[in-house]
Length: 94
Image 1 (cartoon, helix red, strand yellow):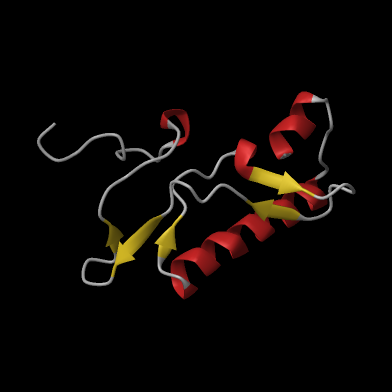
Image 2 (cartoon, rainbow, N blue to C red):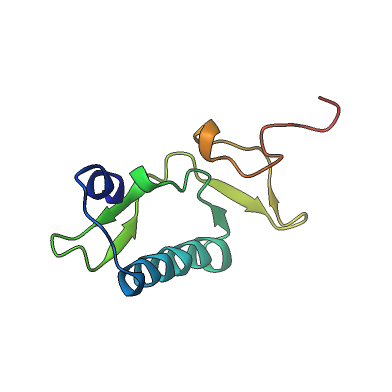
């Protein structure tokens, strides 16, 4: 996990960070555009790295939700509270 690499003191250079971010963006785009799902729990603990720390994979789709084709939104929200996007933890009228 990328989280473990950070905790072990591994430092990622700019090129490596950009590559990993690009891989995560590709994974999220695939989920959204091709499968019509949202991940809902993208965080360092859900990014797996190969042994060389060159390639990243987005893991843990347990919180993923289907995007409603009529509203282009997921029906509910989920994920790790600390990593929720602004406003996701509040519903209208709360």
